[in-house]
Image 1 (cartoon, rainbow, N blue to C red):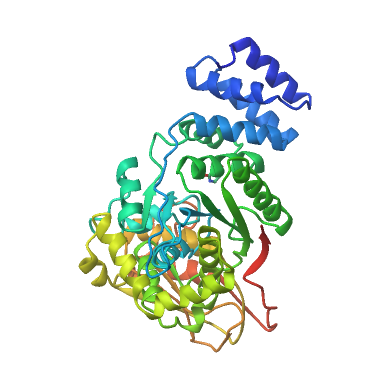
Image 2: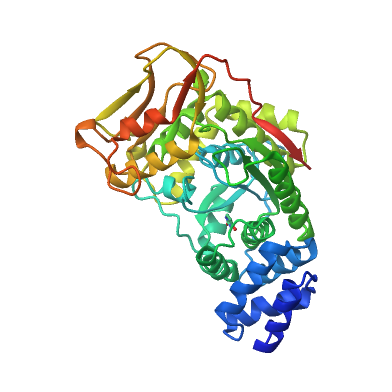
Length: 450
Ligand code: URA
């Protein structure tokens, strides 16, 4: 039963004055809002009061529960998919990244983990701000569908071992409405609200085990390690309240993760990874992040040690089973594997070069993420940025820093806001800082929350 208008006002006043709302009050607000009895301005005020006062774990748990129970909760088959793995029962597993640039991890780890015997039921989203979205990337493959019905999604997980679907309108619909309201009213960056929003969709998606990849750094929504760690702990604790096993990693997002930034370009990078045997050194960070995430997913799903999981993962690439599972995923969702194999980065291509010698001190992920999105919207799915020079590299004048696909400098500036007068190459060049100091090495994985 949702709150009435008067009950909602009392709850808003209590939140405004710094009191903790009871689970019944939180539930009343959400249910009343969905029924139209709690008004838009009331819900917006409650969210903003919480933005300033902060949310207790109890309030966030109640909010998550209200989101989950506002829609359908999928039940997925609990099957051991074998692949010579002793028929051991495996938990269905999902992963979530809080968003990054050049973050093709989902495209890689979903078939990779499935090839090792763990069913993967991955719900994904679209691009947000400068970060990419897995759904947009997959749609670069001709024919591939991500709008899967609940039955189709569960059927693919059982038959193929993995599926990547867009969260449909029946999963956590309260989150969808409240997320849009937060977006209009400036209460998106509230940590508890982010945790409730993310975790509710994962719970509704039905996976029994969840790995959260919380990105931290200038290209992430969490800028400090302390914030990222707090969000990681909150999401793991929340998932456990719903009887799901969960683990979180806090990983680096100070520079684009992989070398390819775009939609189709990231699919090509995933394909190269799954083909093995080894990516170029410039992709070492992507490989490390994928191993950490895939190892955690497999360990949670199969109940094995991560060292054993990593061995299985190596074998799956070298034997070709990971690549075969990617093909099965693409075909299972209606995509053309042949068309994918024929995909090439868009031409023409402009090279961005260094104007001086020095160490690459910084590669701005936000600038390159925004540029890649602009290139894709102007030049199609195979346009985007390929980063050549990585942080810590020594470059000489004229060395290639990046390649911009699907654009010629003669084409001039991309339409759009602030940088309207600037050519894409000039925009890209500004994203590379070259100096005399060798930058310190950064770890890939900062924290593990178990
Ligand atoms: N992604 C979500 O799904 N929800 C948020 O609140 C923020 C990012």
